[in-house]
Image (tube, rainbow, N blue to C red):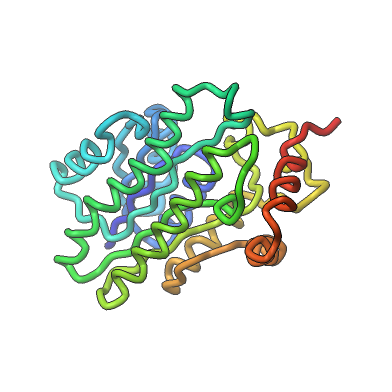
Length: 260
């Protein structure tokens, strides 16, 4: 049986991906900060006749990717699929937001994702098989006033994933990037956007974590490079390329306004 390593696996899209992989008989390595929650999930998923390993870790810490890779190597578990799902956002004017939180965001959304990809690709190359799924956002296609660091971090993930997919096109390793639109998870509470127009459901549809995870799994298995769940999200991502920045900036600002 093959093994999938999923970061940010304790809730939301990461948890739903874990359930989908388990249903398809993949062994799992689940990584998140909340150890007790990981244990509960592992107990639930082992009933599907798969092995579930848990590694509690705060991936926003320095050298987190190296430490996680070393731990997996110590356990001698070959990773066939790497899912870089862990990440968070933060809303507010850049001049007022908390730098300590943004520093952690950059480490998690960019540095740890890149580091884990760097460490896990060489063993995949040696075994001549492997898949990587990086989770970005439709935010990757836009500038993001009032969530500037988050939007920029997801633009990095999209650009990095596309470039890496091209570099590896003549190997047996595929790289996919999942770009969901607004999705009902714990993300909005942590980012402080739970009362914004973006998540009101009035301006644009809100997906479930299950629907997004299934789209990500299906696209990964088909070897798609960019996966955008939902027709309107696809239209928005394509349309943003041709819209003047003055319009897209105003649109994003409007989406982050609180609704009554």
